[in-house]
Structures are given as C-alpha cells and as structure tokens.
Length: 149
Image 1 (cartoon, helix red, strand yellow):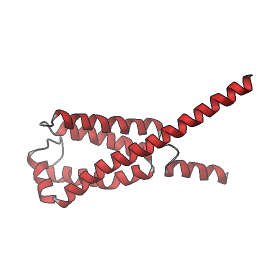
Image 2 (cartoon, helix red, strand yellow):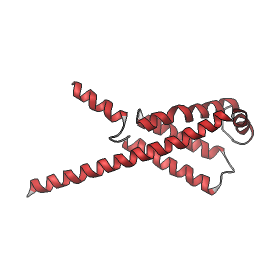
Image 3 (cartoon, helix red, strand yellow):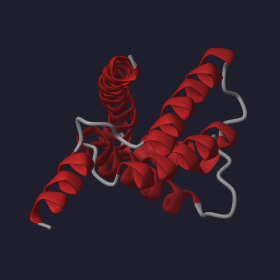
Image 4 (cartoon, helix red, strand yellow):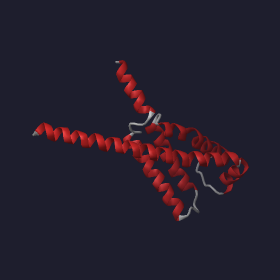
C-alpha cells in the first residue's frame, strides 16, 4: 500500500513540477517581450528617450543620459537571457530591481501602469525564487554537467 501511495505522490509532484515549468516558460517569454519591446522603443526614439529621462523620469543619483543608456541596455540585453532561461535567477533579480526603480522613477504613473509593474514584479520574483524550470538553458546546462560526471 505504501509503495502505491509513494508512486502516486511522485506522479502528482512530477506533473505539478512540469506544469509549473510550462507557466514559468510562458511568463518568462511574456515578461522578456515586455521589457525588450520597451528597450526597442527607447532605442528607436533615442532623442525622445533622453528627453524623457531628463525631464519626466526622476531616476535618483544618475545623470539622465547615463540612466537612459543603462535602462535601454538592461531592457535589450537581459530579456533574451530571461527568455532562454540562461542565468535566470540573476537576470530575474536584476529586472525585478529595475522594475521597482522604473515604477518609482515615474511619479505620474496611472493605476493601470502601476498594476502592470506589480504583475511583472511578481512574475520576476517567481522566476527568481523558483528558477527557470525544465524548459531553460539553465536546466540543460545542469543536466549536461551531471551527465559528464
């Protein structure tokens, strides 16, 4: 009887873990696209971006040009890593902090905009805490390193 229970429990665990991995993949792709698209918009309208960072966004401690360069770089370089599931926890943590700074730096954000930032923050926090899941380069690297041993 105990072996049947143990087997059933293992099957449930495996199913939930693989389901979570599907959600993690979907959420990683979604949040990566949101941030990457924002970086593309900043890059395509660079003069407007610099002006927004000069007069609209209140980024603390940084000159507006440096803040604009950093924000655009973060939004263009890190989302592909998140989408691929490479260095997922580190990338999710950096984007989580970046998301907080972005929300704080724009004092006139609408309630809907704030809810978007909160949702992105929760997704990034989930990836940070859980890792990228089965469908990621992180998992592939760990699996291949175990095979070599």
